[in-house]
Length: 143
Image (cartoon, rainbow, N blue to C red; front, side):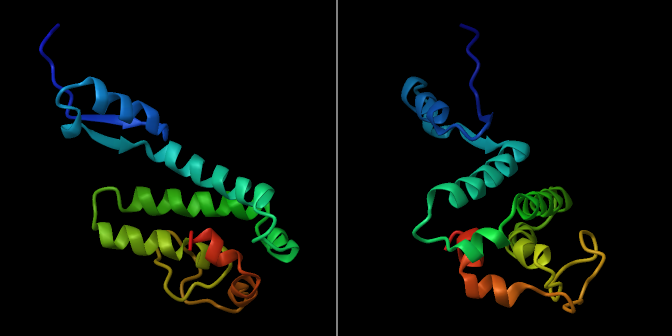
């Protein structure tokens, strides 16, 4: 109608919209999907809650206790801080910060950075070995 071509669109985590764009628009393969940060972080929390509720074979009772709603909120907050701090920076640093999120939340601050952590280097209250032993760390990291 107006001969406009869309180059990018901001998604809310719903992949069916992008699939429809690729089908309907003749140049759909060239439209870039950009994930809204807030939706991505919200979906991260939803997936962790779902993991606890539905994956009873792979998630022990001890692991469920370690991944409380409070911890999930902490994981979402640290992910948000990492994204906002690296919004215009190095992608590799963003990936490192996101991967370090669970370590930070479980008080293992050996590789934390001062722009999101007040306890850089502190391991005095680290729970990371318990979290690794229970297997929940592997599931949080999607492995």
